[in-house]
View 1 (cartoon, rainbow, N blue to C red):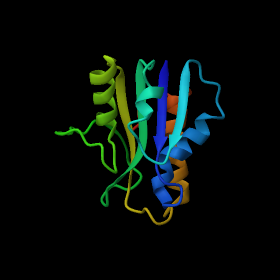
View 2 (cartoon, rainbow, N blue to C red):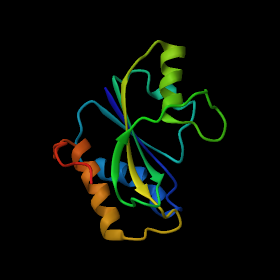
View 3 (spheres, helix red, strand yellow):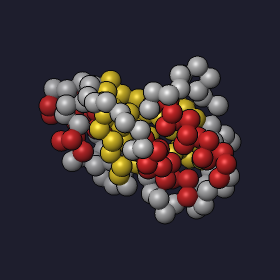
Length: 146
């Protein structure tokens, strides 16, 4: 099973990116895929992810220089953090160490310098559509990142 987690705050402009991608994916019939929309990642999510072979995290990332650029990355985390913000790496760490699960995982991010409003609705919508089409299987990875 594949799990796709879109997270962010719908009240904070472009921080809603992950949630908006999940809304788009809910319109597409996806086989063996669990869609999860959340305000933030939490340790409890690990319970829903135990059967996943692949986990995709979708979020916005603060970047003043490259707004609306798309990236697929994995940022290293040196310590386990269970405070206010749980990172994708922490979720994977918990799956591995608590349940002996080792899924493949990816982080899709849209760079943003605006968490108050959506500054450029056309470019924002294009990013949501590109990621949705890619994850929904209607686009290929060639030329994906802008």
